[in-house]
Each structure stands twice: as C-alpha cells, then as structure tokens.
Image 1 (cartoon, rainbow, N blue to C red):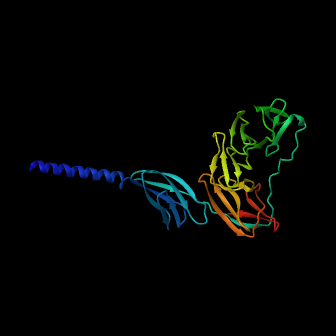
Image 2 (cartoon, helix red, strand yellow; image 1 turned 30 degrees about the horizontal axis):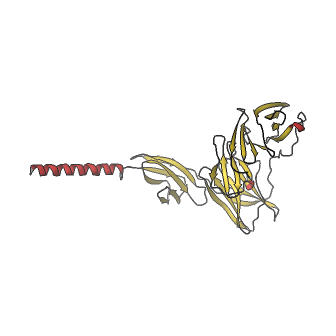
Image 3 (cartoon, rainbow, N blue to C red; image 1 turned 90 degrees about the vertical axis):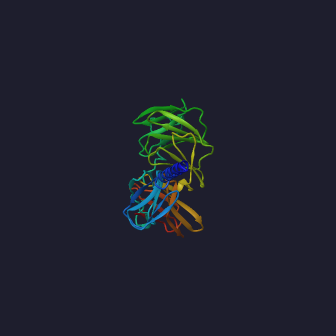
Length: 323
C-alpha cells in the first residue's frame, strides 16, 4: 500500500515537472514587441500571422527568437525590421513609414546632369593607342584601356595613372564608372570585370549571358544587370556569381531614389496602361506608385535636385513624383 502511494506521488511529481517544462518552453516561451509608427490602422505581418492595429502603439506577442516583422499601411511604403524576442520582455520598435508619392504634371522640365558620353579624348592622349574610354560623371577623370601595353589607366590633370593589367580583351569591351567613382565595371560578352581604382585591383566574373542593360546603385558597390526584362541580377565585387532578384523591369527605364533605397521603374503590362513602381532591394519587393491608362512614358529621369520625372511623348510634357 505504501509503495502504491509512493509510486503515485512520484507519478504526480513527474507529471507536474512535465507540465512545468511544457509551460516554460511553449506557452510561456514568449515575449512582446511594441511597435510605434505614429499612425493608426496599419498591419503587422510575420511569417505566421497578420495583426490589424487600429491604434498606435501596437503590441504583438511572439515566441522567443529573432523574427522578421513587416509594417504595412495603405499609401505608405512597407518597412521590414528584424526584432529579437526575449522571454517575458517587451521590445520597443519605432518605425517611420515613408509616404508613397503621387504623380503630378510639372510646369518645368527637369534639369539633368550633363552627359559625358560625347566628350572627346584629352589632347595629351593618342587615340590610336586607346581601344575604349569613358569619362566620369564630372568629366574630370578618363578611364581607358591602353592597347600598347594592355593596361587600364586613368587620365587626370594631364597625367596617366596605371590601375591594373587587362590582357586578351575581346572586341566590344566597354567601361562603366560607378557613381562613387571608386569602381569601374568592364563589360564584354558574358564577362564582367570589377576594377577598384583605389586599390588598383580587379576581379573577373563570368555571368553566363550578355547583359541587355545595367544600373549601378548610388553607393557604387553593386551593379544590376538585365538578362531580359523578366530577369535581373545583382553583382558586387565580393560575389562570385550573379544573385537573382524578384525585380522585373527594363533597367533602361529605371532610376534610383536620391537616398539610394528605392528603384523607380516602368511596367507596360496592358495596352495603354502604364504602371510606375518602386522596388526595395532590401525587402526584395515592389510597391505600385501609380497605374494609369493613356499615359505613355518614353523616359524616366532623376534631375539634379533628386526629383523623379516622367516624359509623356503624346502630350510632350513632364510629370514629377511629389511626396
């Protein structure tokens, strides 16, 4: 009898311990994130749930660990943040959502930076010894490939500086200056060279196709390339192969926002319907800015002030994105 009571007591103790362990690692293994955006009626989205927040701030209970939290509201660009959830703790997250701009007709044309494409060689250089060249955006430094010794050089203030050897280059080779001026991209066929003008080094990447168009990021650290309008890849000097993006656009009709966080681009999905979208490389997703019929756009550009303009060839006027 005593043994039965003892066994029962042990059983109850084990069950209590099991219940305690379960509560500790499952229902009680949670923390809270308190989100403040300064707005009402927004959504908090995680991998497992979506919560409507009618008021601000908004609290969300989650299992411990690091979560990816997306804050979304109509008329604003979504923001995604990583939050570390700790047991029984409340983490404060303050986010400022950025308003989606509207498209308005502009009474003035954009003031664009002067193009250096047609600027001739400097007088001190022999054109017969140069296979290809390109000026930087300010027209102060000239990068070129010298055929006589097969070296990349930069001409500035009347002096040529050797950057790196580049031998056995095929015809059609061309340079692209990065916006920062610290990198050159060399393209020919399915070959790409990243040339660091400060470290005097180079890196070759076989990209597997011939790019249709390219777009540097504003920081100059990565290059986006079109295989086709439905396939865009990202390349940077640290990678060994292109990284595919979800962005579907023609990079010839795409520009970066001034802060370098968004790419504005055009999509003509249906007859006479033009869409303007903004792509966020960090979140790898696009937000629709405007969708209009009978609004053909032949050019998108960012002027010297950073404003994004669109040219309508039918009306022969410009429209600008306003916040």
